[in-house]
Amino acid sequence: MAYSAHDSSRPTPALLVPAARQSVATASSVDPVVVHRSRDLLERAEVLFDQAASVQDDGAERFRLFYLAAIRASGAVLEIYEPSSKIRRRRGAADAWSRIKARAPQCGELAEYFGGLSTMRSQVEAGLVRTVDPTFCARVERRAMEFLDVADSTLLAYEQGKLTPKRTSTRRTVA
Image 1 (cartoon, helix red, strand yellow):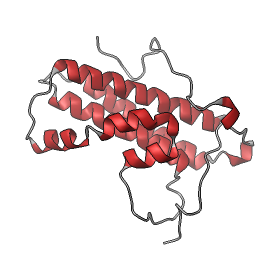
Image 2 (tube, helix red, strand yellow; image 1 turned 135 degrees about the vertical axis):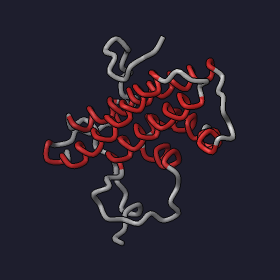
Image 3 (tube, one colour; image 1 turned 30 degrees about the horizontal axis):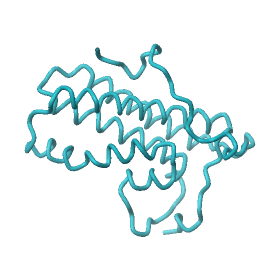
């Protein structure tokens, strides 16, 4: 069964941040530029997910597109926690999966899962892996869909002022 990122029948998980830990933000703390950029990345992720779901191949291209959808979803979440509108230089720049685990704990398990697939993704792109087991690809599809749902829930919570990302000044420096 193929799923669409726009399928309204799929369940949307609740944001996994405990209510006691969320602080209510004022409307002025919601940055419309951050919302726009995050929404754009999430929409790109949904397009990639839909493309992957429609590919009829041996699984390698489907796997690659599901992985890319997940990384775009992680970008949408990171945009909330590390807005790209801020000028900064990362010290010891880590990959997106490591950064999202540190900044957005609600995405930690999914980031760990997809981080473990990074090497396989690069091997698929290099042509070293040409087939991917359909069962494994279906698992990656489910996890990518889960990441899209969590990213959407995170963005929605931020838009509604229910999520105030804690930004540390040590992570952002002027270039």
